[in-house]
Amino acid sequence: MREENTKFLIDTNVFIAAVKKGWTKTTELVLHLLLNLEFVLMANDVLLAEYEKYAKAFYAENFLEFMELRVIIANPPDEEIKVCMQYFPENEVGDAVHAATCLKTNAILITNDKHFDPIKKAGLIEV
Image (tube, rainbow, N blue to C red):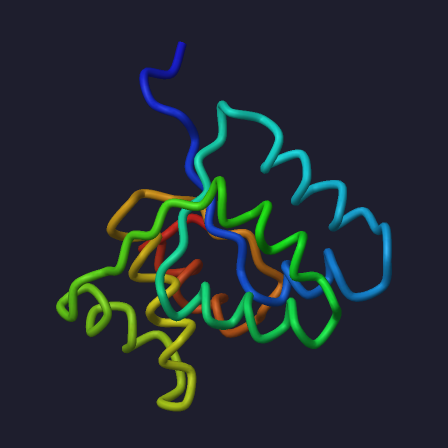
């Protein structure tokens, strides 16, 4: 039996897929993670700002409010961001911050963004 709950970080593109077109498989996945207390949802301030931007764009503010009740904010230190940044293009600092949050908290990243393939291949975080 696990001593600690499994941690996940839901990338922005998964959040968008969950709220953009009504009820989808991605919506089901995100709700499953939100409704099951054995899962811990991690985020950082950058990710929360991204969620807010798209929640407004897709009229999903209520969904975001529900998520915010379950998300734990863990902003990674600069050192971990620098370690992760080497796996991303210079213009993808936000993705490096998300990866660094996973590194810091040992969270599994849920994404369909190919920018995370190099860091996944390196085995630095679980994607």
